[in-house]
Amino acid sequence: MKDILENIEYEIALLVRLTTAISPKLGELDRSGYILLSKLEESEPMAINAIADELRLNVSTASRQIAALEAKQFIRRSPDQRNGRTSLIEITPRGREVFGNVRKARIGAYSQILGGWPEAELSRLEETLEKLNHSLADWEKK
Image 1 (cartoon, rainbow, N blue to C red):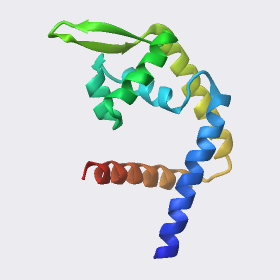
Image 2 (tube, one colour):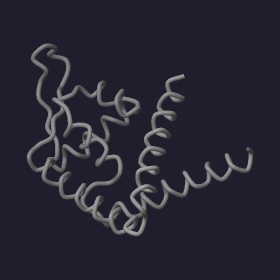
Image 3 (cartoon, helix red, strand yellow):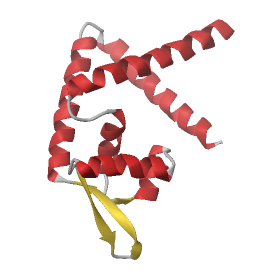
């Protein structure tokens, strides 16, 4: 069991490294920007605290990532009408366009990378990655 866990730990570390290395080749967004825009693209405008909670970041890290995307005009802040002390963050049309282009490039890259895999293996990988991410999220909450 120890050997299996050591191999899993190494393969996950390598996966993160390899996917981070190809990210700049796929458009204008780094991994953190892509994940943040993905969250905003699928939701209503969100407060920074809610973004930080959803992405499991501390507020200062989320604020830095938001500032970087705001400087590129991929997102914008607007006052929360219910709470004047809070700003709501939403994706801009430019951010939506960039995100869509990067998502398309990423899917195209994975299509090439995984093109020779049988559909059953792709489905198993999808299920396993989802299960791993849920387990990681549950463990992190403890």
